[in-house]
Length: 230
Ligand SMILES: *Cc1c(COP(=O)(O)O)cnc(C)c1O
View 1 (tube, protein in one colour):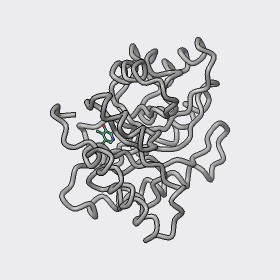
View 2 (cartoon, rainbow, N blue to C red; view 1 turned 135 degrees about the vertical axis):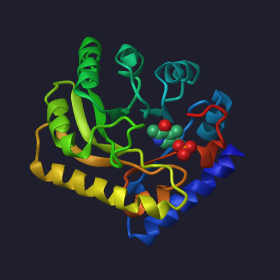
View 3 (cartoon, rainbow, N blue to C red; view 1 turned 60 degrees about the vertical axis):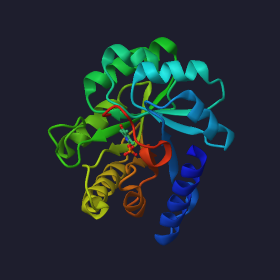
View 4 (cartoon, protein in one colour; view 1 turned 120 degrees about the vertical axis):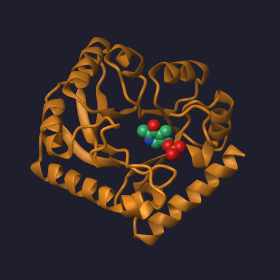
């Protein structure tokens, strides 16, 4: 079931790349396994999937303890500073750095564990009051501040677009994200590579790919509906 769903999503990712003349390798499909059992993850591992996304620090830690395969775990959720210890050294990439306060807590933990920590800065692209993420106007400053922390590397930006009926409604937001990432890249800030743009979910990942996403985070289309509202 899950594997079949994954293959369908994979085919849609490939078709979207094809449509806009991008190479399939330019886009990482992250299977968002939050709230879903380890058995489903193992089914996908058997099918060759290596990139998984989780949004709760403790849940991610527990899953990693149960699954010994070398996987790439992406932390995509709101991270509280007291949970940073569960994520640093385990996640291959923290997608959701939205404040200097959080970045400093990550720095402290990364220094303690003597690891480098690649991160994305989360931008609240549609300025939704219900969402975390830094406002677009303040994003450059946050990127600069985060990049100045010795154990953090800013690899790019992340955005959660609003829930919409028609994915086309989010195209302008994705386009704006790409423009923002490009303008930051051109600044050539030290410690900032701006090669990743994490955007696009079940409802809008194809449009996100067409607008330049390098990582799409897909949960529902692979694992089915979640019971909990997160
Ligand atoms: C849950 C979640 C997703 C996946 O959402 P779906 O709509 O189920 O694909 C992607 N990104 C983040 C940050 C999430 O929390």
